[in-house]
Length: 277
Image 1 (cartoon, rainbow, N blue to C red):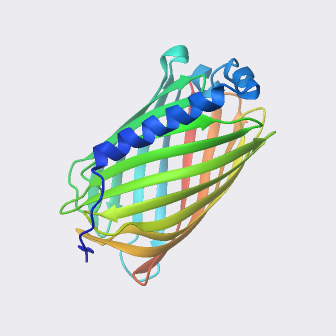
Image 2: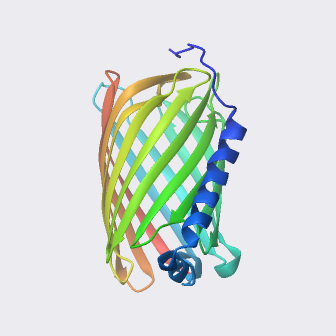
């Protein structure tokens, strides 16, 4: 059931502009320091100059409340454009709550000396449990000594409600390791904002193999069954990896455990194949 307590909030579009403007202003201010000026002269992130790839995979979730299990099949294409940005497109066929839906999404990232801006969006064909459409904007700014920060805003339109999610985060890159914390404030329609947290640790090798762990907790909007969106207490733990058994063929794998309030728990995983073109 939606929380419909009305509180005055800044319109979503104005919040997006505020977050983006604040991010760029902060980066320009920090750009004046010698440490950041030297860093900004470095090249853009390596992902913008990598080879394009295709990825396809399967996910499965096993629910503990005797409800039908979930699964999905996805295909993703990533096209690095060097100085012209980074484009990613993904299509997915999803089965949840005994229903199926198809969604397509895309994101475009552009690199500046002071950070990276990413615009994303998606559309679902038969939105019984997925968002009908989403639009998001994220700014990843650079700070001295391997630190960085993120400012983001996303809006999701469901069958009978709209969610707004704002995020603020900080990260630290230390050699092959990355540590990150993100705070997220979400609301359904004009309800009071609720707080959630996400903590990540990731190892990335020189050969682009990866191991990571993510833990998220707090109150977030969740679809608890068909066309029923609610702000509930969630806990989510994920282990993920990318490794390369062949030079141009990688394996993507993940395992997770999630709790959605008193509604259900789920244990799931992902297995995918990534091919460098």
